[in-house]
Image 1 (cartoon, rainbow, N blue to C red):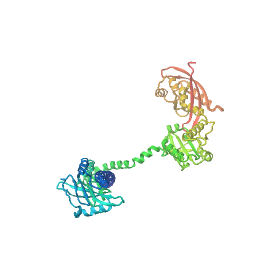
Image 2 (image 1 turned 60 degrees about the horizontal axis):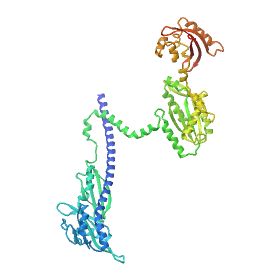
Image 3 (image 1 turned 30 degrees about the vertical axis):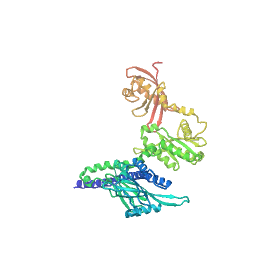
Image 4 (image 1 turned 180 degrees about the vertical axis):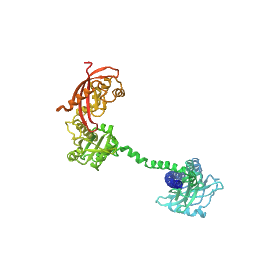
Length: 574
């Protein structure tokens, strides 16, 4: 029973979430479709206007010719024939002095006749509107013959006498075939999978009448209204297949419990799509581990500030966690880095810009301040013992800081932090855990000296180096390559296996007790400072016996307790 209830709840919740997500997706999809159809309506409405302009050039040209000569062109039929040759959608061209059609080309055009247009009741209002306003009008569509309809484009013509008085001459008329005049636009709409409806008003009216339309039009369509020929035209556009809607609920119900698992995936997809842009932007500028700016985001923010305030005072700071390698080896470096980021954010608040360069290196840009103003805060912060928690225990660490002033020392972003970095490494050379401002005395040689690191020393030092715990089983903590080869071993694993991983395994069994006693007597002697020196034999992996000089020092550490640092020299070859 309980399992059934849980299953039902999961199914109902899953269905609810699914329907909400589906509705959201459909809404977004329809919004995109509507925007696309609105753009299509704008584009093809412009195309219609271009087609009408091409048609009206027929009547405008005749109007100019008649206004210039005051009479019908002598070769009217030739002029009309030439115009119609490039306009196949023009059914006929007519001239109607004072509204009476007198010239027609072609003479046998369907529905054409030499009639007084004013005697036709359905055309009287349009004729008067055009005559009185001087606006070319488009009337129709009306049946011109059994096979097609037409729209009449009428251009009023006026003659101007020497005194500048205008008198009405009549009309130049182009009869346009429907739907031929719209063929180019309709073809494009159909090829792009759009349904359409073209409507127009009568000249001077506001009520629309459909000229052409696709079949099975949806109720809602995107439209574009424009004026031409004394009429208002409206082009409405919709997808040819109608607006997309969600899949029928019957399909979703049929999938049953499987839909619950599908919903999980759909939710993930939707959230991913919605947050993708924001995530990519944050990813590009944010350090994922600490939540601070990464190098790119920090540089962008600082550059943006300096572009806005090129003359402002500011301080650039570089920060480094001391002995980070030890922290990384023994604990979680993530915890230390997050702790450092939190401490920086709490101490250096807005408008400070804080970033992580990578590794254990952080950078801060403090705007609108001087080096003298921030020096007390930096010294107080660097002197504070930082801490982080790992596996339920608190561990402490220290930091080193270097800073430089803008624009007195660094006149650019890059130069400012290069000087701050130099000051930071000067702190490292002086023993870490401190803060220094950049000065001219901090030279490139300081950085070069620091770069000559422990790795190079250990690799090339002419002696075997051993580090082991002074108590318990005297576990070996470190052995360099020279020590491994001293025992005729090729790898650390061989060396550890041969010696048992302890100092006892280093010394010849016959001498271990005496050597051990001598070492401790020496390090406990007043004034020895933990130093000792002993000679003993060792037995290598290949069975060779070698005489060794052992120079050691006992050191107390926070991590391992008491340990011995030892230098072993092979005296067999001396």
